Image (cartoon, rainbow, N blue to C red; front, side):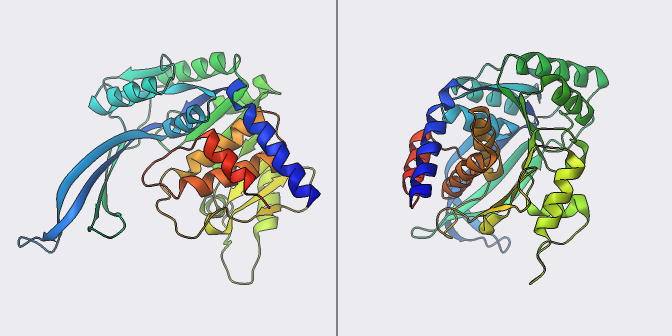
Length: 338
């Protein structure tokens, strides 16, 4: 019991330090768009639903969602990235500015299309809203070397005035792994936290990374979901070694998360927080990264930061769409720890 009380006290102290933290956020900025409707009937033209329009929403996605979560927790994110000179890009900059972010280091380029993921959702009068289809605009691109250098220089300059750097690599080429490796050396002992969807092994030397199980499987060429075959400890230890990082958090969906550090021979397994009645997992990984990085920057130990990130992930999947959480919600979850 005393151990639980001590952990609860420590976690609350860490969350209280969030407003003192300033983090650079370098990555692929995406617009998450939601078109919401109420089911009316089946179309006569084709076997599809007809929805009566209710509303549409645009919110930050990708690394912009990580930054939004940092801001919603009363810390200060400083975004570094690029958007297109289009309606989606300007809308994203306006939303981020309204959330209190300095967007001067988010470059606007006329030759680019801002990545936009449009999700169309519908529900009946007494049923839960369900996503019907997603339309993606803005294909992964290759940025000119001069633009990559400009983004890397901005990330370096801003991160030197911050507690660290958070990198969100979603495959749109805003992030150069070699530049991140150089920054990890130059910024030490500042935090460099990386979330990479496709290029996990290219970020050797970062302080910490937060892959999910499918990303680990793809990176190592192993299966982690065979019944009775627990390869997770060996996979995490192998990644820790190959990435030369101080800590590693593998998110496992409904199974919670596993924390690996150089000091522990075995991973710390944290069960998922909350119920199994998940509303929407969109953007949950961004929330986990935001809270984990914030906590480490606020002097949390990796297992403490992971506990906070686990609470945050459990909270955000109970919300519809790409969502954020507040310090008040996080405190309430911590106090529920028994």
